[in-house]
Each structure stands twice: as C-alpha cells, then as structure tokens.
Image (cartoon, rainbow, N blue to C red; front, side):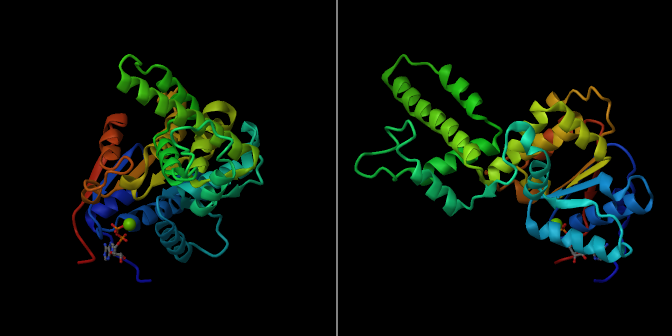
Length: 309
Ligand SMILES: Nc1ncnc2c1ncn2[C@@H]1O[C@H](COP(=O)(O)OP(=O)(O)O)[C@@H](O)[C@H]1O
Ligand SMILES: [Mg+2]
C-alpha cells in the first residue's frame, strides 16, 4: 500500500468539516480513497470518535478496501469506526435491536436458492391462483421472488402494496384482470413476509426493510443511532437502491425527514455519475438528483483526475 498524495479537490473533500457533502466523479478518480482518507481525517482531527463514524458501501469489495486502508493508517488497537456494506450494517442493528419489532434476533439469512426452497415449501399456503398454474404450481416462483425483492428495494411494504391495489379501478375487463393479478401478488407478498418473520428466515432485502421499519416504528431506537453517529459517509452512492437511500436519510434527518431534533447533517455521499446513467435497476442517477434536492446547501466537489487509465 503506497501512501497517496491527494490532489487539491480530493483534499478539499477529505477536509470538509460540517454539513452535507456530495462528491461526484467517474471511476478511478479516487472516490473510495477519498472516503477512506476522510474517515481517517475525522478521527485524527478528533471531530468525532471512531465509533461515531458510519461508512456504508454497496459492495463487499469496497467495504474491505476501506477497512484495510484504515487499519494500515491507524495505530494498533484503535477503536474501530463502523465500516461495512448496507447489509452488514443492518444485520448488526437487527441483531442488537430487532427484538423491538418482534424479530427473533437469531434469524438466519437465506440465499436466493434458499428463498426458492422456502417459497416452494409454502406454495400451497399462498392465496395464489393465476400465478400457481395447476399443471406447474412452481412455475412462477422465481418471478414472484424477483417481484417481491423489487418491492423491497422500492420501500413498498405489504400494507402499502395492499392499499395501492385497493384503490385500483375495476371497471373494464382489463382493469378487473389487472386488479385480480395484483391482489394475488400483494396478498402473497404479505403472507410471504409474515412467514419469514415467523420462521426467523430473512433475505437480504429484509435486512434493509426491517431496519427501516425498526427506525420508523421505534423512535427511541432511531434516536440511539442518530446520537451515536456524528458522521455518515456513503460510497458507491449511485448504486444504492431507493430503500437504502431512505434508510440513510432517516438516520440523518429522522422519520419523514423533518429533522425535528435539529441534528447535524454530516452526510457525505460519493457517487459515480457516468456509471449510473446506464442503470435502470434501483435508483441510479436519480439518487444524486434527489440528494441535491434533499440537501440544497450541500457542498459539491467534482473529481476529474483519473488514476487508473
Ligand atoms: N491522489 C492520488 N494519487 C495517486 N493515486 C491515487 C490518488 N487517488 C487515488 N489514487 C489511486 O487510484 C486508484 C483508484 O482509486 P479508488 O479510490 O479506488 O477510485 P474510485 O473509487 O473512484 O474508483 C487506486 O489505486 C488509488 O490508490
Ligand atoms: Mg470506488
């Protein structure tokens, strides 16, 4: 690991003290390096204690890179900041506080293959008709899982979905058909979610959604984490999905983003603008636009120098 010499823009981003900060740049411009150096700078300047810093990433790889770099720069035995993927962060929160929303905190995590098996085991329990053809009852399992996962990514709870379906028009034959299909999906989504909780089996989407639910339903738990984290940093922001985005905003601004507690908004996000345009899954570029709207006073820094090509 070579010690890098930060360029001027990188340095500015690393040393930004207070308030929201948006860093935008292409791949190889040192975004992950900047987030990492910023965490180190915050600790060394004593703007916050290590345990008061939360750095989140989308991929395991970026989290590992950051942990490793921080480890090299800090003295042996330093207290560790929270640096992890969204999923690992939520896993940690749920293990510690999930019981507040009725979760057995010894839950196990299901892989995609395990989710399939779980759905198959319950296939005749679900209120399915159109999506459970008699000739091949398991035909739609993968589609159902994909659909539910998409709903989770879009912060659509089973009750939200049921409410949406309830309000659908049912006049024409087409509308009636659509209503029937979506009702089936919404009711199955609800039951599937309940079965998972009952059997203490969560999927990756649940980690995010249940943590958000915990923060929304239990103000004292949210307050605990808000008081804990003085700085929150998000790498690979363009890849975070809508629900992850809501989770971060809820941590920073509180439920409904009202910031009633007048908390400091030391949120840094680092996003790749050109990778995002080509994505349609999740929130993509709109994350960055939404961030600008949500934090209009955010400082914006653009990194232009590429160190990879
Ligand atoms: N100021 C710098 N001087 C020299 N190398 C740098 C500098 N900033 C970043 N790098 C190097 O560029 C590469 C890409 O950095 P990284 O932080 O992973 O970029 P990104 O997250 O934007 O893709 C790494 O090898 C890193 O060490
Ligand atoms: Mg990176």
